[in-house]
Length: 627
Image (cartoon, rainbow, N blue to C red; front, side, top):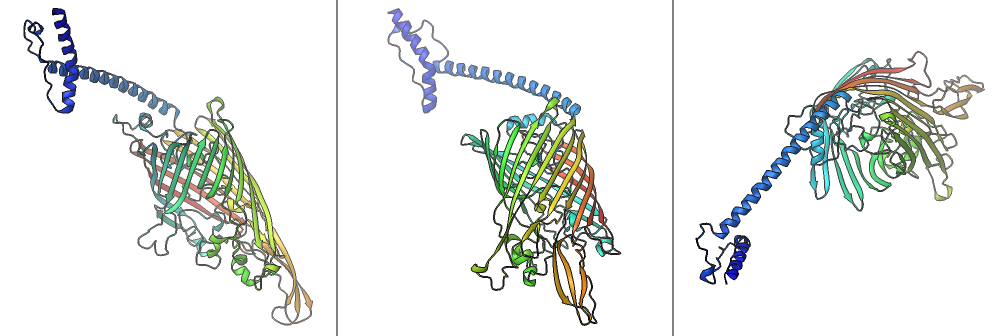
């Protein structure tokens, strides 16, 4: 009987914590179990109730757990502090990698935290990444804060952007020459025998300030990256610079990328695949090369575009990539190209019946309104391959790209627009193309040598901001491509983690393409006729005139192309980027400088006129990057 009473008492004590927990959950007090006999009552009554013992036991367990977690946190804090000290020492010793003025550092796996020429090392977003970034900051104050990002579900949203205050000085006035913004129209440098060529200009602008968002998420067995970026270099009403300076928001980039295994697909508005890369075939701004300069038209001779397209990239290995893209085409014939006299005057006035882009910024002009409605036949196709390696720990990048373009227009000589019918419609169709190559080598730690080149037939529009044409219209109404090429060579040297020095030399060339018409015209200033040999196209030379029938008039020779038909342009550029302050939790503050000298030489120099047009430019920019 005593044994039974002892077992029953033990079961009661063992069950008391469970009963106490149940009572707490239901909001009712626990009812003690009545003893079945007097023998079950202990000799001496206890002063502690069973539920009190259970609560005390749980409290003790909780104290032990808190103590263990505290010890673990102290250990992690000590480890992070040691890592921080090591990273700071390593950063001061080795320095940071150079990067783009509108992008993050040039690490292949870097997340683009903010477009900037000397940003702090970027990492995959998230709390762990934030701790690693903070540990690398020389401005760390011990209070670690995560970078600016947020999550919705499993997707990470990373705000991008910077605030720019830019000052520009040029020794010539380009306000009405296509350079009204802070970007330079290299093909419109005025000659010094003009009013604009005799004036200098100073501007202050915040147009290049930028807003953006990057989204990272895993889905469908792969990884998705979304990217949107805008600046304020859009259209501005003529009165805007007088009072409000209300620069317009403009879409720069808007694309989505999906990568699964060795296949990657990207669609939307992105930098063209023809743009030189720093790493692989990535579309992220930090993996592209367009220089460290402040000019928003970048470097003379740079091949680039930002346009809508779709691309497919294959990654056979981690170091090798092959991509094919189909991108928005635009057949270009600017005012520097002269139509032959065989084209009706009405069709010349609207740029060959509105079939060719005039590249004018005047959207109210007869040709400018056509720019967005050019009837292109097929997209531009670009095939590109890239290889990256790191021999001896120094990054090396090569890429080669091929371009194929198709042009078509109704032949308005054999099929005049007046009276055009389906039965008498004739077309002119031609194909053009080009090849580009880039090399980007880290010669010694943080010193990079960069060279890129491009040669094409009818690929002039990709040599951006030069007003270079794609083609001409020949006297028989058929299209004909113009040969063109460009190149850049330079260096970028991250001397210290806070000071980057850069320098480039770039140039562009546009070939001559001439059509000839022989006709009989009336003599000037009297009677008689003349046999004229007249040239047209791009870079053409003066014609000839011979007296056909005797009379009192004269036969002046037709002139050649004007001094806007550039043959060769070049630009040396150098400057530095100095970071005053950097903290991954609060961003950074830096100054970006640039000096450039631009010169252009036309195909034909009229008598008693300058042989070249040139200007010097100085940019100074103060930039605050978002974290």
